[in-house]
Image (cartoon, rainbow, N blue to C red; front, top):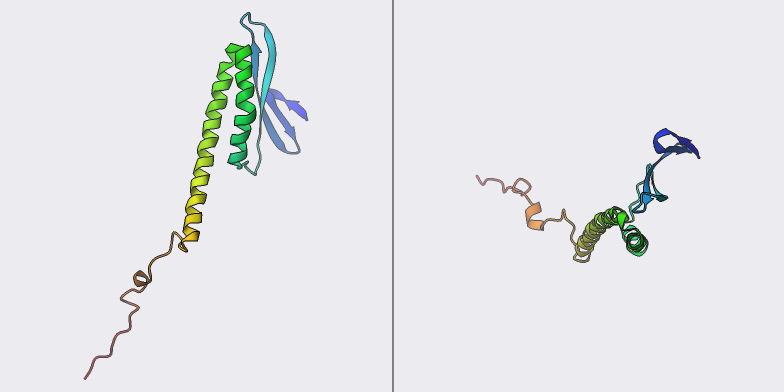
Length: 132
């Protein structure tokens, strides 16, 4: 993967942007750099539940430990918690839609179902011929 200016990497016609966050101790000594990658893709990652589980089981504990060792990295933990909340909101929304759809299916109705009486309009009713 060739490196391009401003943190852009291009491989197989896909662009990956890189954001680096330095980890510095209280004396200003650089301890390391954490790189965050974002891959531009035509297929969005949409498994909200997997993302929530990953954030809860890997990211938050990792950042919490880093903050205990290096308190100045707390913005990273705050950002991870904010990201977790956004993914949790998406997962909750998806779950609510699924519940609504399952309820509609189990009751035999869909959102566009209407009663039989409302489907019959006055224009569709047959008229009796006039008696002479």
